[in-house]
Structure formats: C-alpha cells, structure tokens
Image 1 (cartoon, rainbow, N blue to C red):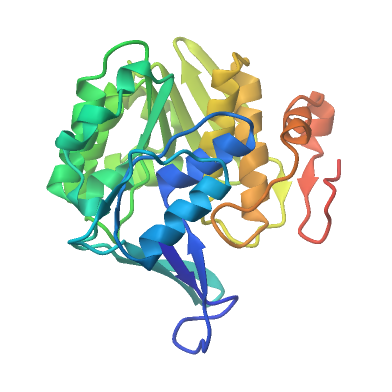
Image 2 (image 1 turned 90 degrees about the horizontal axis):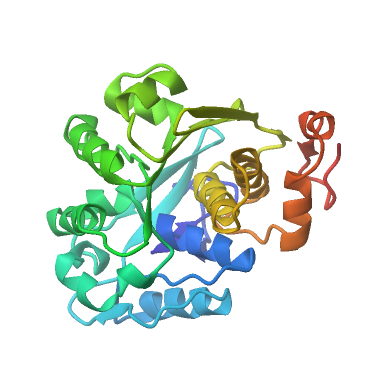
Length: 313
C-alpha cells in the first residue's frame, strides 16, 4: 500500500506531499529483515507505478516478493495521513483495490506449511469478504509446523466495531500468537485490563496485550510477564505496533525468553515512535538486541530522545 503524507501539516493546507510504502504486514516483514530474518510478503498490487514502487522498495529492504500478484484490472491501495490539531489521522482509499481481491485461492502456491511464522492482521480481514475468508483459511487450516501470528489491528475507518468485534475475536482465538492493544480490546470486546483480555482468549499460545506508553503484558500458558515501556519522545505513533510485532517475533524466532521478546518489541517500537513514516531505519540490529538485554535498573531509566542519535539511560 502507498502512503501519501504531507510533512508536519494537514492535507487541507499542504501544497506538497511525500510518498511512502506502508502496510501492517509489510511493515513487520521490513522490521524482521532489518533484524536479519528472512521474510517474504504476499499480497496483490495493481499493475501500476504505485505497485511497482511498493515491490521495488520492499526488495531494497530485503523483503522477498516472488509470489506477489500484479493485477492489471485493479489499482494499488492508497491511504493518506492527515494531521489535525497536531494528531495524525488516516484516510483509506482501498475499495476495489488489488489487495481487496485476495482470497483463499491465493494460498495454493504460498507453501505455508514450510514457513516458521505466518503473520496476518485484522486490517486484511477488513478489506473485503474474500480477504476475511483468506485470513480465516490460514488460521483454521494451517498445517506443518508453521506458527500463526495475528495482530488484531482494528481500524474503525475500515469497519464498524459491531461488525469487526466477533470476526476479530474468532480469528484471535485460532492464532498461535496474538497482538492486541488494551484500548482496541476495550472498544471491541469491552475488556478493561490485560487479564480480562486473557480471560477472553485463554487458549492462545502467546497473547501480547500492549498498553501504549505503560508497557506490554504477555501470557504464555500460565506465565504472565509485564515489561514497562521505555520513555520515548514521540513524534508519531503510526507504525509502532508493527515494529513491536517485528521485535517480538524476532525474539521468538531466536528462542529468547518472554521478557526479552517483549523488550525487543519495545525497542523496535520506540524507534518507530520517534520518526515519521512507517518503517524508519532503527539502526544496527546488534545494538537493538543489546538494548533489550540491559539490566533492569538500566531498562527502567531508558529513554529514546528525538534529537539524539544515541539512546540515553
């Protein structure tokens, strides 16, 4: 998907804008490749300049795209980032986009059973009935040793909570790893705390409940782990959730303990929060992992400042 954004101002008054490549699953793929993992992204794009730009940008970031379909009958999806009263808002233009035509038929050549992790999001489920069927097919029909990862990613501009709530809950219940914000869980399902979300999703292998600048809590079996979020000079929140998922999944792929997985998620999210754009370069992967491994006292004093290249603690 292509993101159109006016730097630091609202679309209503902007005279120029910038083009970026964005999208929940592709953001996670970019984050994982930055951390040294091999990642492939699948979708449908239009056979148009926007689609070509997406594929070129992802390949330059190390993401494999051999099975992406270039659709000559539909356009590439676009969304616009607006700034209203200092806060970012998103306007989607994805009706009849190439991605919205994805369906279970697209799964035939993806060899999902050979993958270690397959990551999906609720945004894909919101695009169309056939896209929702695709998400359903992956989560209900997985085979082999593939681990399914699902980010709830509720977007009110794409579908109403009344319609989304039962669909996203059912998807989450069938995934191996689930990411959800405490605020979106409250809006969708009426839960107030991370523990209440766990009561709603008791059988999910690894449930991660994110609570903005407070921290993240994971539930793996009977284990409950909470890691506070480091202090961050926030420039923009868009893309931070995807960065968190990439960091967390990197930890899981490397066999790290749950606390380290959450810390890697926080470190990746912190770098996204202090930059504009969905996939800023967070710096050397080894440095990111070292930050996630610092002592408890150092972690609690950690701060990611906008004006500095180094991180203070």
